[in-house]
Amino acid sequence: MIHVVWIAEMRRRLSEVRRCGRSIGFVPTMGALHEGHGALMDRARVESNFVVVSIFVNPIQFDRPADYEAYRVNLTADLEFCAARGVDAVFAPAVSEMYPAAAATFVEVTELSEQLCGKFRPGHFRGVATVVTKLLNIVAPDKAYFGEKDAQQLAIIQRMVADLNVLVKIVPVPTVREADGLAVSSRNQRLSTEERRVAPVLYQALLAGRRAAQAGGTAEEIRAAALAVLGREPGVRVEYVEVVELSGVRRIAGAVWVGFTRLIDNVAVGSD
Ligand code: AMP
Picture 1 (tube, protein in one colour):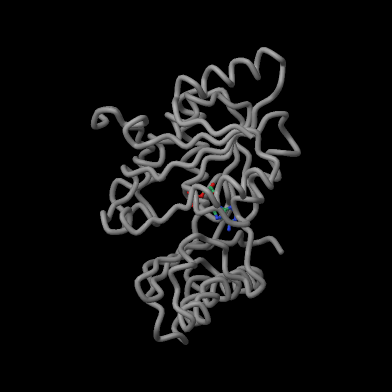
Picture 2: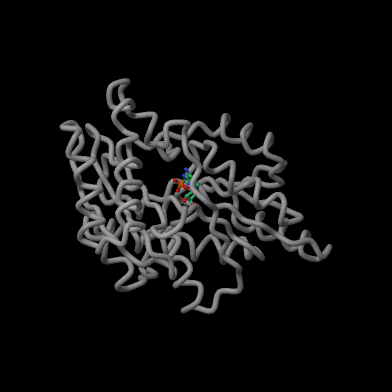
């Protein structure tokens, strides 16, 4: 496995790979790698000849500076994780390499970015769409892998790729969960023992919403069913619970605060 920090070197290495006729699969991450990222890598490993993982904590997508400061990445552990997963190249540039000057050009996917998380995290999806555009321009993969856990992000990337004619296939990967249903996330590490006990209530609430949908409930009844479950945990503050269509799939999506940690999750409604 190679570890690359310079854009020019990444491009040079990948042009050699392409010259040999090998397909490139790409998994963009912010590090602090876990089984959710692992599922994306495994899928890329099966479908592509050469797998690239990027590890880059993108400052322009953090709406709160404290959140950026608190984002901890252990590069040594992440490199080991990638090597064990059969990754061929890790691209881990410094902020100064990705943003040598303050960015003046941004990619903004309107409407889709303004709902759900976008309402509460101004500028977040503009930062995501911009860095993913840059990474796709650098890596130029055949396929890029994104988790359904971040269904709004996935929909925004799919729309950006379609609107800007980016030559890549976006592959969605199902959410990886802990045994108790909590979606795996680097943010879970921040939960205290008591908060961790409470956290699966978000998934339980979304499942209650799905049952209401399967019983023929309206969007408002689906929301109410989910909110009723969340209401049983006084330590959980609801940011939003909404029924939305993302990438042609009807989903119930939620964001909650457990202590100082913000958790998001979603499930498709109408499927098992
Ligand atoms: P992040 O490092 O949090 O920016 O996530 C990088 C990629 O991993 C994104 O496409 C996420 O949607 C995906 N991802 C994160 N957690 C999970 C999970 N539990 N299951 C599946 N994909 C995930």
